[in-house]
Amino acid sequence: MKIMVIHGANLNMLGAREPSIYGNITIDSIDAELQKIASASEVYLESFQSNFEGVLVEKIQSLHDFDAIIINAGAYTHTSIAIRDALLAINKPFIEVHLSNIYAREEFRHRSYLSDIAVGVISGLGAESYYAAIRYFLAGNPRG
Ligand code: DQA
Image (cartoon, rainbow, N blue to C red; front, side):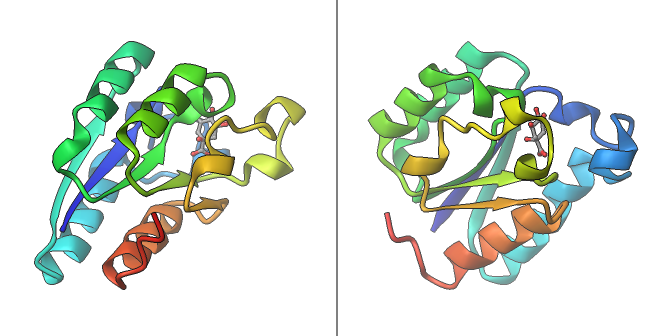
């Protein structure tokens, strides 16, 4: 099994960025923990981060070889029809994750262009949102 983790805009700033909302954890430690969970199950995992919408679209388009995607698109969650369309085009099961609970925040964060086409959405558990997502796929529940 091959799993791709995609982090969108501003997630490279985790650790320094609004710690009262996102905590002190860095993207590198999230990726390292995901890698640990994956390798314990002998699953191949890759992580990718970009702040650019088109780069994220091209990365998603290239995922033919992968079985599942975990994506935190950051603010693009709330704006990007292009990322939605790329996920529809590649047609792989994906879980939408967020560190914060987007439904407990500003109204403009309540809309997601990804949720209705996702296998599921995990929002508000901090880094655990990612870990729960990978555990779901590792348990053999792709539902894609
Ligand atoms: C986020 C929530 C988004 O609304 C925000 O724009 C982010 C991070 C989260 O992980 O909580 O960049 O996706």
